[in-house]
Image 1 (cartoon, rainbow, N blue to C red):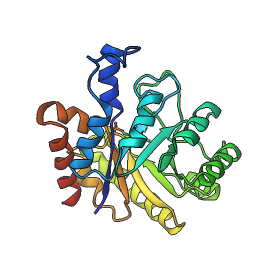
Image 2: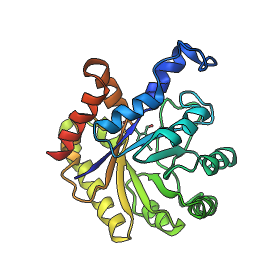
Image 3: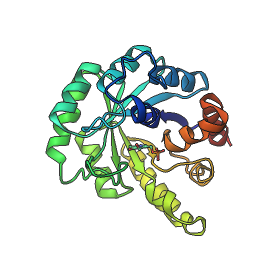
Image 4: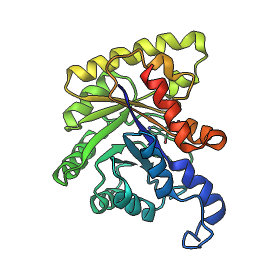
Length: 244
Ligand code: PXP
């Protein structure tokens, strides 16, 4: 079965909307570690957080707390900058997912350009591996990017499903075919293949037909559904979709 990593950035977004700069306040909520535990109780195979350079949602303290509280797997999404790499080496997450980062974007917009930044990415992969951290590259479903990701020594690629998610249902099949070809190409190169971005309770069905998936990383849709049915139920419902 496809594993489910839950991205809880938007739980921190909600907290920051009221308590930015006051996360020591006894009134501060929602609690990030409690949310991560709820996801794990419901069957998530890991928790993902993105420590952005502008710290707009997840804070350094959250990542250290999660490192201590998470029982499954901590996946730290991050840009390849010296400051954040140093933080990752102190936190020691189980996995790092390297992503492009642009301060103006609302969410991660495209995949990493691994061919262009090959040397710097390869160095970071080596440093993270030396610390015992597995590494994933968040990339477009593109053969050159997959090939280059493999050559950096990365263990996993996470294919960007944003383009698929933004298409109308009648056009999504072509994009699924493209993702499937890319997933096959990556698997043949010994890479684990994950998917993430824009996956929701409706579009997930089409994606699950691709046999190569290892894990989906899903955030916004699960956190949104949690508002009406609770976080544990929202995670369980997504897991049911993955089973079917
Ligand atoms: N994977 C990566 C690499 C991402 O940057 C994001 C967005 O933070 C996600 C998965 C989750 O995307 P969504 O919130 O649309 O489910």
